[in-house]
Length: 199
Image 1 (cartoon, one colour):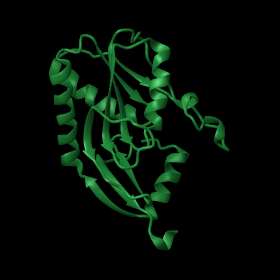
Image 2 (cartoon, rainbow, N blue to C red; image 1 turned 180 degrees about the vertical axis):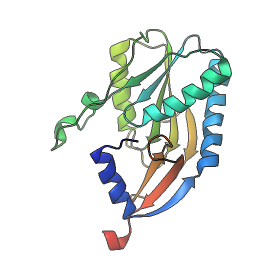
Image 3 (cartoon, rainbow, N blue to C red; image 1 turned 135 degrees about the vertical axis):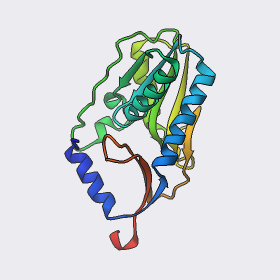
Image 4 (cartoon, helix red, strand yellow; image 1 turned 30 degrees about the horizontal axis):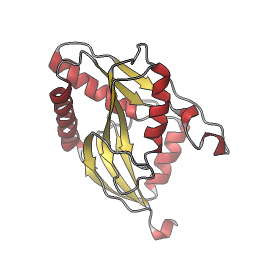
């Protein structure tokens, strides 16, 4: 298991905070299965539907749902990974250069139904950037948003998910992290709270 320096720094900072588990491994799996069932109900055989995960964390949502859906349907689905680095509205405001992730979409989305996936919906700015980046690959028939966690009261833009794993109401000093077994070693969702002692 390889973890980047930025990821190690994030985990180090989060260890200094109070935390509680929002979804344990069992309910994590149940949530994935429910999302897969909702997608199957709306998209049937997925003949005109593609699944796209937003880099960096949305690709984990995509990977797990892709596995469930392909097993259930007995067929391969068209899936892609989309990097939004250069479409972010804060791209030129950052002091340190941003290292882009990989975009891997080897198909045209023209007139396709697209399900855009991310792990946590917070301000909505990441999704807006994703929508802008998506148009470089064609004009879709329809775009739906699937998010594993929806922090519904922290939105800056009028963006709402079509599929939600779990709604988590948070305060300004809290953050939510979706952890994956193949990355962090366990499937779970954790809520971190900054304590007064830690600033």
